[in-house]
Amino acid sequence: MSERFDEAYWEQRYRGHGPGHRREPNPYLVAAVADRAPGVALDAGCGEGAEAGWLAARGWRVTAVDIAATALRHAREHATALGPDVADRIDWVRADLTGWTPPAQRYDLVCAHYVHPATDGPDLLRRLAAAVAPGGTLLVVGHAPSPANPAAGATVEEATAVLDAGRWEVQLAEARSRTAAGHHGHDVTLHDTVVRARRRP
Ligand SMILES: C[S@@+](CC[C@H](N)C(=O)[O-])C[C@H]1O[C@@H](n2cnc3c(N)ncnc32)[C@H](O)[C@@H]1O
Image (cartoon, rainbow, N blue to C red; front, side, top):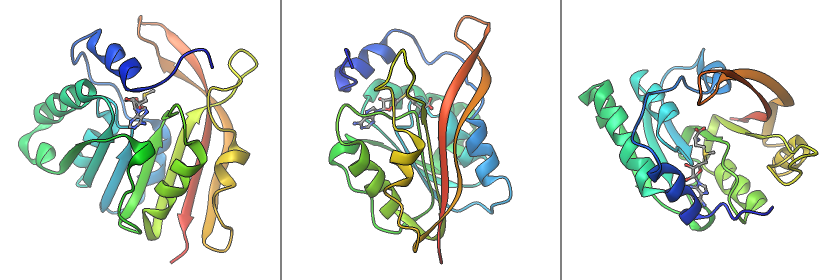
């Protein structure tokens, strides 16, 4: 990878613009919680909080973690705009996920969308998986590696490798493509890896 996706990189990205408009939550998250009662969630690498805000608006209590202070500031502003009750349900945590261990088996949902830290990929996945409560869901969405960018993210196989079959029911483990609204008003095609698994009760 030619760039280092470290704190300075992300801070520069988020400082380049204001809070901007809210975007829709990730569709794989929407599908994952569609039939779930609200519980306690961890959004790892929450960025500007589209998923955390969406979950909180549906009654989830969310811990949202990111390395970039500016992203968290924007995220907090978005959540406040959704209403004080929504904002109150989110704890924003500035932390480097490569050195941060969430409480074990604490969350009904642990999600990470497009978080590709400069180091520590499989270990991070292991720590996130360890934070899922019995019966809870782990959702990891990433950029699929491509010929143009082979190091973009984890393959489905790499992501599922950290999940012990005796403890996890893998519900979805696929490379998928979807169309989303791009930054400049036209649609873009995204190639994702999606892993969704339930920790056996
Ligand atoms: C591509 S953005 C995705 C943000 C959001 N999840 C979304 O889907 O829009 C990646 C996010 O991960 C965060 N991030 C990257 N490395 C991190 C690390 N080591 N610890 C915590 N957050 C990190 C970045 O600051 C950024 O907000």
